[in-house]
Structures are given as C-alpha cells and as structure tokens.
Amino acid sequence: MSLTRTYDPQNIFARIIRGDAPCYRLYEDEDVLAFLDLYPQSYGHTLVIPKRSAACNLLDVDTDALCRVMAVVQLLARAIVEELQPDGVQVSQFNGTAAGQTVFHIHFHIVPRYE
Image (cartoon, rainbow, N blue to C red; front, side):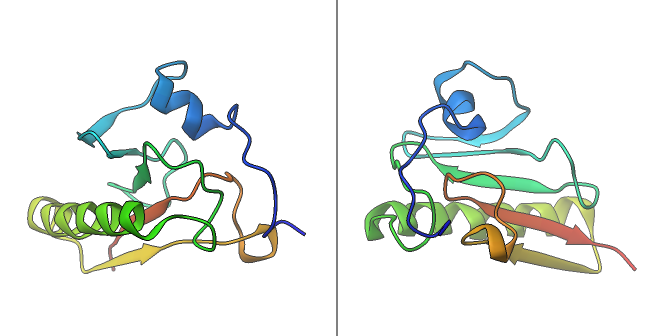
C-alpha cells in the first residue's frame, strides 16, 4: 500500500533540497522550499515542500512542518493570483498512488487556472 511506505531519501524532492537536482526556486526559508513544477498543468504551477520533514504524505508529516508549509502555500497563492491574474487557483495535495501521488515527499500544488 502506497500510504504506508518508508521514506526514500533519493526521491527527486529530497535531491532538490540537498542541491543534487536543479529547480527554479520561487521561495525558500529554513523550513520550506517552493519551485516551479517541471511538468506544469498551467502557467505558474508551483510546488511547495517542507525541507526538514522526511514525510511521504499528509498522514505522516508532523503538524509543525505542515503548518509552516501551509503558511507558505497561502503566501504564494496570494502572490501568484496578484502577479498572474488567473481566473482561479487550485491548491491540491495527493496521498498515495491511488490518489495520484507520484513523488513520495509531501508536497502541495498551487495551480493557477485560466478560462
């Protein structure tokens, strides 16, 4: 079952955090990193991840890390809406393969939507 798996420190987001893989960074602080999605669903599609949490999904992330990530999700969603003027903005998070999760490091998608 993909909801209860061991965290893989070689996943792409862990490699990005370590600097072993490139990304286009939009935001970074001690706890959170946000960058553009390599395969965007729309212009401005952004991923937001905790840097210090080895959690695969929402079910195993610690609450403090989750709160810090969500504060940045809100901050960036506001900035993306102001800058890109989309018709809507989607914030999503997937847990497990059956739910569409492909990278098993907890992350949130901010997807501007245009009509």
